[in-house]
Image (cartoon, rainbow, N blue to C red; front, side, top):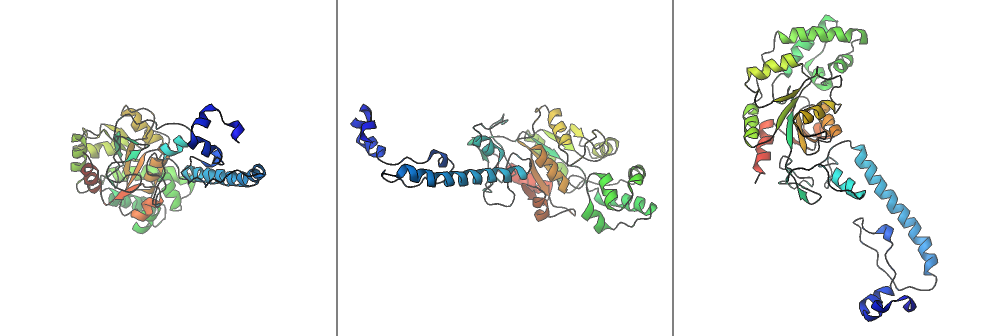
Length: 346
C-alpha cells in the first residue's frame, strides 16, 4: 500500500502506520458497538472481507431494524420508551438514527415526574438537550375526582334494567372510558347500547355527589403557581363534568377542557388529547407534555399521541398493570406525583 500514500501521509508516520492496517467496516461503525480489532493487510484479504463483512453487516442491519421495530411496536411516546427495561429508547434517538435532530422542544427542560428516561431521577436529557415540560393534561374520573363509586352505582342500576348483573369487581376489571365498549363487555346487545347510555346519563346526573381525591385541588394550584399550562381530557360529558368543576372551584385552574361529547373519537384515540394541546396554543404535537390518568386507555391515548404517560394507582389498576398498558411512570396519587415533579425543579 505504500505506493498509494500521498505526500502528507509520507510525512506523518502515524498515518502511514494506520494506512498499513485494515480500516473498520464503515457499515459496522457508529452504532455504539466496539469497533473490531484491525490486522495488517495480507494477500487474499479482499476475498476474506467479502466472505466475513457481508454476513456481519447483514446481521448488524437486521439487529438495528429489529430495535426500531420494537420501538414502533411500543406505540407513541416521546420520552422513556420501553416500559420495564433498564435503559429505554425514545423518539429523539430514533429520529437521530435517521439523521434528524430533536424535534419540538421549544423550552429548555423536560421534567418527567422525577424520573428521567434512564430511570435515574431528576431532570431528563433528550439528545443532549434539557427541556422544560410544555403542559400537563389530566383525566377527571378516578384521577382528580372520586367519581367511580357513583358511576358504578348508576351502571349497576341501568344494567339491572336490562336484566344484567354487574358487580363492582366486574366494573373495575372491564372498565373503559368508552361506555359503549363497556356495555358490550357486560353482554348488552348492540341494539340496546345507545339506550343504555341515555339511561345512564339520566341516572348519574341525579346522584353525583363525588368529591375530589385527597390533595388533588392543592396539586393543581401548585402546578399553576409553578407556571405549568394545565388542561383536562375526560370521557365525561361537558354539562356534567363542567358542573363538578365549578362546584369544586377549579374553573381557573383547568381553562382548557375536552369532553367525551366534544369529538366523535374517544380514548384511547389520540384526538382528544391532541385537541387539548392545540387549544393550549402549543401546536399539533403532544411531545414534551404529560397526560395523567388512572385507566389503561388513558395510558394508551397518551402513548398514541406521543405524550409522557403518568399512571395513577386506583381500583382500576396498580403500578404493574398501568405500566403494562403503557405508563412511563406511576404514582399513588396526583398529589404524590406533583410532589415528585416539583421536587426536581431547580
